[in-house]
Image 1 (cartoon, rainbow, N blue to C red):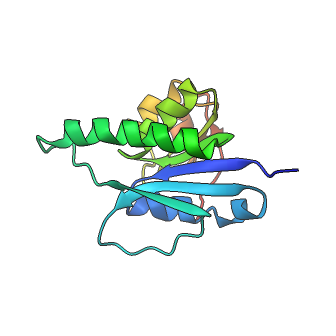
Image 2: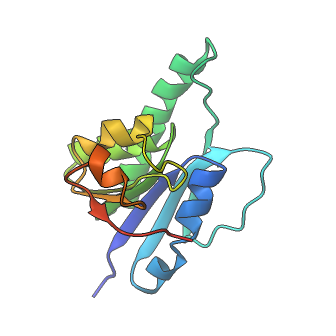
Length: 154
């Protein structure tokens, strides 16, 4: 019987470090990662890694880049056929979350551990449609009342 597959999506830096801290998932699932291509070198443990251009929403060209990310993410979802999309957030994550939901995948979002009492932009957007929304601080249950307290990933 084939193992279930999780597509993980996380921007570089802290969001990616949180996703990489979930290495125990590899024991139970096949994993695919979408993250940003940066100079920051990371030893990813996922079975496959797809790199997207880093999008800075303050730059004029960001809209064109972001539309490109949506199309590439759609292709990755069709190719990889994950059972679920898990994200720890930021720009590269939202296309995977939204398209994954549209394609009938289970959506799991883990709000950033660096936010103790205020939501992230990706968190606010994903909270509306995530099947499982996890916070790492009890204070965040005030912000996201339907969330699950999962504790910290580190």
